[in-house]
Image (cartoon, rainbow, N blue to C red; front, top):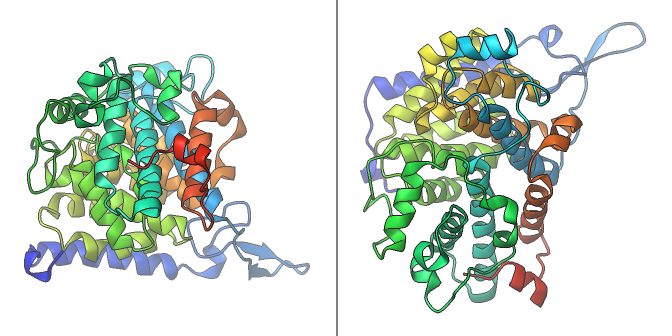
Length: 424
């Protein structure tokens, strides 16, 4: 975005940036003897070991591969979605009555059963769309992924009970059925309370109208349906600002308010940094100047700042979290709750517990928190018993591993791959 398009708010924006910068610097200044034990790596720069004399020394963090982090991001996002699905719309008092003082703490009798929602469905179709766009780029040099992601979202619309000629729009011309392998996974055809904004926007496009964009928004929605599917965009480029812009553009296909698409852009940017092994405080520090260059950034910046400030205070009650960050029904609140929950604990299961137990959009806040915490801590941080209970786990794992192959150093070129992921 050109410098002339900056919308700088003197005083307010600088205050937000100063707070995030102080948090970032404070996280680097924690004395060695107050840092984490080897069993709790994650939040600060290194864990602490004890030598034979009982003296403390810094230990290197366990090495996580890019694949570990990508798998963690997508699978933990689905786990968070499933943990929050059964308590979405419930007030926190009722959640406590049904599940105890700590709320939902895992899958099992009396709790969530591992069923995912439209959040996970749309994340998978977004990821598939990016794979297909990358195939197209390799084969033909067409490097704009947004139309291919639009095509993927129309395939998701088909799974929600709309015939392909009705759902596909221009992509259905001359084709009675959609192509590719993901659409053959019948488990994705379940309707899990899909968001009205997403369904309506995709139906508007299918009816022959132009695609939604930042320049020509279809609506003024800032609901969380854009951010909850944005994490896979982190894979598209090595340039974080390209990732940010693409996160905004793909969210604007359905959500026209700046907070609806800048929350998605911000999530993609944060995940991009986490996948490289950067800590979340460092990722937030890098995000802030990028975010402030975009018109309409004020709401997202304010919520992000509030999340950082709240995490710096330590763990707070769900009521206090809602008071400071909202309920997660709109994009900037969803990202703020996810950031707070990921920052305030070094434990992925605890981050997910915090992110879903509140009187708000629990599945979406859990999903986005899972994206962040999974990318930071890796797939091994997810409890095995949670993965065993996760609906669609083989499908989620398969499409994620395919993404690792396509975005890796030696992507497949055989005919079977091109049939699995047609480049359009």
